[in-house]
Amino acid sequence: MKQFFDKILRKNRKLRKKEFLCFLLAIGLFVACEGALEDGNPFGPSNSGIVINPSSPQVNKGGTLTFTAFGGTLPLSWSLSNTQIGAIDAGTGVFTSIQGTPQVAGTSTVTVVDAVGDSDTATIEVLPNPLVINPGSATFNVAGSQDLVVTGAAGATVTATIANNNTSSTFTIPTVTVAALTVTVNFTIPTTAEGNQTFTISILNTVNGDVGSVVLTLIAP
Image (cartoon, rainbow, N blue to C red):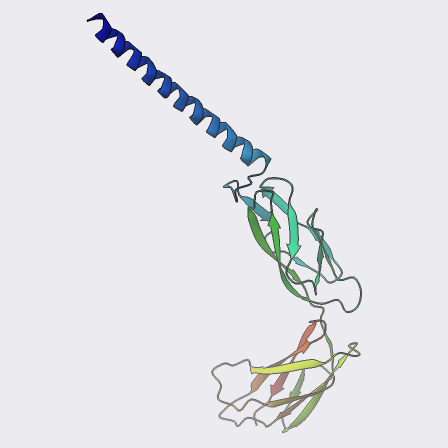
């Protein structure tokens, strides 16, 4: 009988020892995971999260802006998708638009990645300068044409589009042609039934992204 009880006690001690070892192993894994998240997880992104501020800023040509990241694990790395509009310091998040010539307007995606692979993106826009267009907006009551000359854009080319400000109008839209920095609009005059018509001609400098517009008004008899 004594041998029987000794066998049971030895078996229970063995079970308790296994349970204790499992408990120690679980504690060790927990501590290891915590340390990995603090020091940089070598196994991939964590759930720490990182957010860029501001998320969609605008700057003028020649301007600078500093992005800030909230959350995440240091060190951080910054990058810019469109380097035609500027550059970003990979370590500090300072964006600087092009300082030389041409200064280009446009948008770009800003990305930050932290030490454990978490990332966030923002969109930055470098605003265009207004084009100088001569003679500017005009009004006509007879058919003809109008030349619109872009000044201060030597060496550039432009494109132009025209749209009727009355989107429900059936009046024939004037034609637009472009030669170098001159936009020519050819138009007829609306009938009395059609009524007065106004059009916006939008012009884009294809080199640096600057934009401008003028309004053409056609008076019906």
